[in-house]
Image 1 (cartoon, helix red, strand yellow):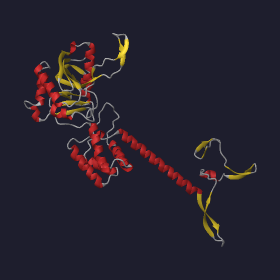
Image 2 (cartoon, helix red, strand yellow; image 1 turned 90 degrees about the vertical axis):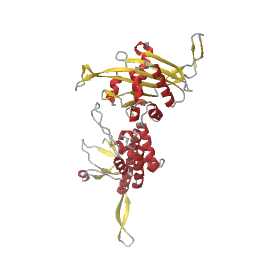
Image 3 (cartoon, helix red, strand yellow; image 1 turned 135 degrees about the vertical axis):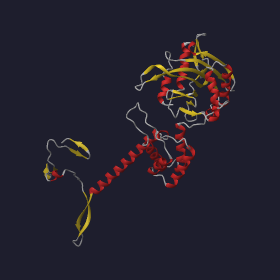
Image 4 (tube, one colour; image 1 turned 60 degrees about the horizontal axis):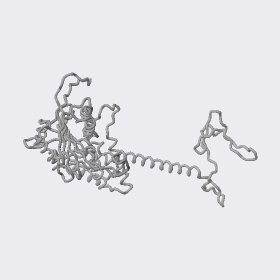
Length: 420
């Protein structure tokens, strides 16, 4: 799935374009008991419920592809009779009207979804008539196919916080009545995936709100797919691999890791056309080796990092953008700017000392010239053509240096522009 595919579906989640046919749900308590189940024709819902459920459906298609949204593939075994993919195909064909299949699905989620607390399982059924598009993106009044799919959202249900409120029945301020509120989805999926504006029954689009700790157990056991790392997990894993080798707390190791981040950031493709998504750059082992060498990592450390990197990520190699922390790149840039300023200040100090201390000659006791150091009280730096114009003059009894100035000439004293 790409961004355009997801946006095409998501744009339809509004009152005048929505074609959801049915909505089913199951409320599960903290002891994993089914408290209640329900099924509704979606378009028959009251407006307030209609829009709230639409908001939940939209969330399952929100976030960044590769981080919040992962495309998972079914292994061959799950596409055989009795497999997860085959079960979801049957659930889709029933259009959520088979209660036995719905109960089986709820049991499947409850058994394979690890969550502490109450939650609500929601399942939407939709049939989208995918219109033909011309090369210039204009729609034609004919259908390429009907994309029939399921959208599942698993939402935490939490008790509102205690507090004071107005008790209308008693006309007084008193303890607020606490109730259970359905939150935004924690996890969800769309089956089959919508790829290149067409059904892909071999894949499922998996959604996670928490990109640091997604429900990998549900990917594997609930959906029957292999687990995939989010971009956040890849970034944190890579940081852990590198810092385990180069160290975490020393200023020098932090600087090295900052350089690694900057060099990886330079690999990310940039396009001037915001409507065009650049092809991602996969960070291979050889690419990592080049980045480590440019960042000052020793050969021994680099060898360990490269081996661990290859073993951990295997064939699912990260993209350059998935390994970069923008905050660390920014911090490294500021660190380099600070070092450059310190270097410039030291150079200026050195130049000043060399200018103020100029070797001259003086006679020793025997009348021989010997090297000596004289410190000057006034140091001038002028254009070569001005040197011959400088002369001394006694003004008000004080010996002064006089530098003639034309009307269009400017002067700087101690680095500050001065109007003369």
